[in-house]
Image 1 (cartoon, helix red, strand yellow):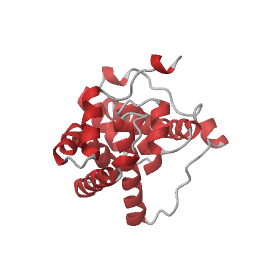
Image 2 (cartoon, rainbow, N blue to C red; image 1 turned 180 degrees about the vertical axis):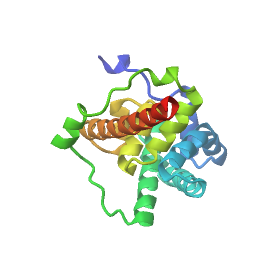
Image 3 (cartoon, helix red, strand yellow; image 1 turned 135 degrees about the horizontal axis):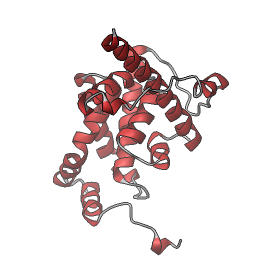
Length: 207
């Protein structure tokens, strides 16, 4: 593929807004904020798990974005660039709150976790046949809150925000193998919790 064949990462409108914002056009930056504010807020809320911290992450994200807008080269989607700032802000805030210390960026799947893929119980039927979509979303939300923040961030970006593996790696500043490892961990943990939940509910209904 030649350079001219490559799909542009920014729309013309977004490119113009960024160009104006770099010249400290407050209105242009406000327009950028309005485009992504809701998505960034809900991403932050899923990571932080409370409104107040999510608001702090949101404000810090756009403040940092405004201060460092010149560093955005346009080689990726603007959302990918800004979600990386949001992720860094969220994880730093969590480390301060919970004294997590340094988080390893490139984690590999352990043999125990690899074996867990074969040990998770198979659902007897399709959960969607038994539960409403809203209830499944609620169960998933509760289950995702139990994930480690680093795995939760990967899961949200990949499976909720639907970024590609490559975009998720770029957004988090980690390797593709680390994304795959964390995503597998997250999915295994969620499936195990959902399996337990569905089996418990099935036992209650049957009793």
